[in-house]
Length: 492
Ligand code: BG6
Image 1 (cartoon, rainbow, N blue to C red):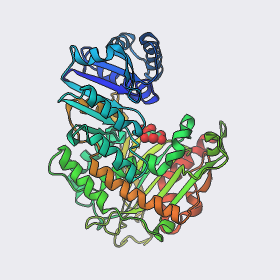
Image 2: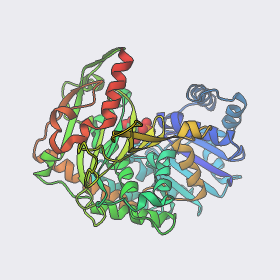
Image 3: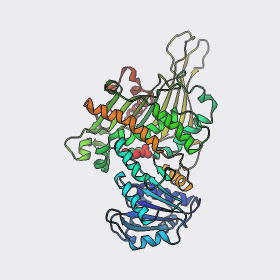
């Protein structure tokens, strides 16, 4: 990897300590980068280099299991702390020197700050002359709260960086198992030929989280699950499942195909908002380990209409997917954390076996996290003399079992791609716009119809069972039942 300079705005924030610095540690540990690259952690607050480095060392030891002390020291030696307040046009005296002396030609500005600061930071960098020809800017989500505000942010950034130098992060795209979706689809012939409305009955994408909103209540209450998870992470997963094969694995060729899917998403209207969407909020609950607070207790407010759970029936209106529902679901404070995509194939057209019962359908389950694996459910004959008895059985490919190695975190891959100048795993501006256009059809119709949140107890699978039955049979799908059963077994 070429040497680079990385400047992290929000350098003493939660994301930097939890994700960005640990990612650098691992890349350093695996010799992909070396200590000649430089990192500047920028904050608006004043603090000393010593104080910052001490905090960073402590956090690296906390977030990295079995961290190697020597590698930590190497990383710390690369880091400079600087106070830069773009509003007050104030910066530490040594910052300008850092930018102008012995610098590397690849310069990455990582904006791990609220989106409202993106425009002013870019303007400041430009005025200071810090944007060199090989500079890139990394933007963390959320990019605005609706189409208008996201366009405003994108316009401001575009005044200073061309699109080819803008890297909009959706960390789901950096996950190993998410990248494997591309390989699964496009390096295997058997799936692609049945990957369509003729053979697939429905697709389910679930991202369940066991955590609540924790200390992020102030932020979360302005966003909610639709903006925080669906508009970006779940839609990106949907795109990878639904897109046409790109001609090559080149950034714009891949993103062109994803864009077509986003544009084919059916917008919600005043009727479908009522029949095809559910929003929920968690109330107090209990786990075996004790009482869980409600969302309102978590955010310390008496009322809020922000959703912590969303379930949707989405439609990709194109030739390949006409008539195939995509069920999307995400929620906080579920019993377990797991992300999974289930492709439900259609039933066999005719059961020729003597019992004439309805057979279980073929099902491809892609478990993204944790316990990464791929399962293909098929019917098999139960051994025995005479007669045909059969049952569903799964072929399993367990990642951890087959690949005895550390799976890199999403941020490791994404950071290195920024340095390499590869935009494939980053969202292009038109993608973000199309995703917001769709998300807005939900937001505005929820508001117009005054759609309430259905309450669900923390530690349960959300309001699904109560409000989603009939053709929403997905709520009772196998993985939910399995997870519920596991929970009951664990309790026993
Ligand atoms: C973030 C959301 O983008 O993704 C969080 O803001 C969420 O609310 C997180 O918890 C989930 O990411 P992961 O990688 O833990 O599935």
